Picture 1 (cartoon, rainbow, N blue to C red):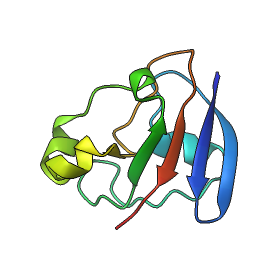
Picture 2: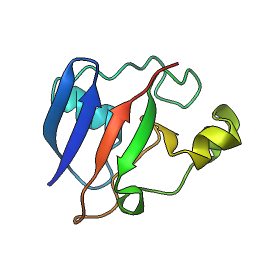
Picture 3: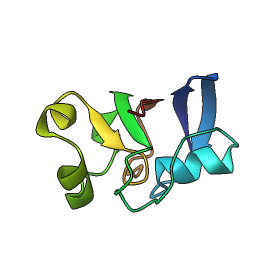
Length: 99
């Protein structure tokens, strides 16, 4: 397990995540409201800003490339249902940023 900071409109949540969990899964497991509807990268209700720790996350997925504009991706936006924790070390901080 590794610590992650999740920022939502309700506040800042310090939670634990396992490697290979998606951010939506982490949020659900820790009872943090992280809007989502499909978990397949289609609805983008789980749009997320990576504040810290992009290097500890999986590469951008094909679904994210199809759903998010290039400018959004360049500015650190991803989809919470597609983001997976890949590293045991390093800080990760994410902000839920729905449209």
